[in-house]
Image (cartoon, rainbow, N blue to C red; front, side):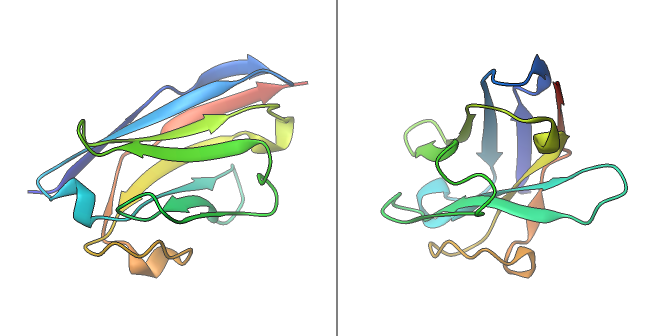
Length: 124
């Protein structure tokens, strides 16, 4: 079955960096677009970033553009989210997700498998 496992969350100070990792199993990784969404306490889930199966296309939320970078290693079946210049408003549970198809949609409805989430807390 398809499984995703995130890692790399933690508690940092504003201005620090973190790198999240997401390992996919049970699906051909290079045929799967990958994305990150996040949900803060009391907030709705929001799109963060997405990357196409061949990594030739990436999309970002305006709130993270220029600070976050999504990437993937198709040889290792891992997707990454490099987060720089973190702000307290980036505090959330970050979820990795996958879809059967290479196009990187920004709509969560396009994705069918989700990880358990990893917590990122940024203090001021």
